[in-house]
Image (tube, rainbow, N blue to C red; front, side, top):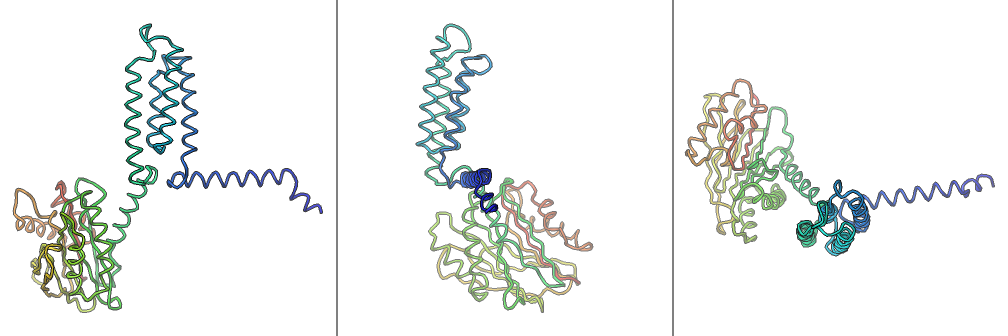
Length: 381
């Protein structure tokens, strides 16, 4: 009886009610910032600021100018839907009328509602409405837009992560988008197949650069990641070529190089779709050798064939795959860029190539306005 009375007492019921209200408010806040909830809370808050600013302007027009009404209007353009935004604009227009009547005609001195004030407030409202309509058309609230872009960038990064290699092997990869942006037209997909014995890596350079190519790179990286390991090695590039052709993009071509490496023997095959040759450092001679496979660009014509080139990574050897942004420039030949790249790479032969990929991009193509990607695979001596 006493326990039941304690549970049903007024303080207990009050604590339960407060707890439910707090949980509901927290859920509403989370949904709002995810873009899943109504904007009534933001509208109510902004509508409340309009009379407060009006009273402050009437009381102290020197410190709170009539143009201060642009603050809730700008915030509304970012937070509200177009229909709710019109209600806020109506309240702001009424506030300007009240301020004008209370402060007197603008010809009577400073700190009054002038035609310029009305134009500034109207212009901010117009641009805020354009922003709100654009968000409504896209269907992504501004609160969710940045999170979505971050999520897309992380998905590309995760898809480009290389699998862990067995003892005796080391891999390095560095990716640098054009102009310091977060999205790149260069990407890597990789997988260990045949029970983990084989490493398959595909390095792709989508036409365009930076943000222009980022959306296509995201789509292709997902598609290529699904194809890799699901098809025989010689069937990957033809399937990827067919996929690009079906997209019917105006600028729909890409270059790609496909490495199939046996992690037990060191034997490998390279298949290329219009990509630059790979470079192999032979530890015995200390020389770099170009490994150039032949094949057309992806997405150009159907029925393309891709011939492989074979090689072997012996202990101490290094294989380097890269995109054209690393070696191509308007004022030099690609062969000169490759010579510069191998010259810089020779500095790491004695000390090892750990951390070398990032430094090679810095040394060879730091300020190039193009996407750059570099992949190093080394076999320990």
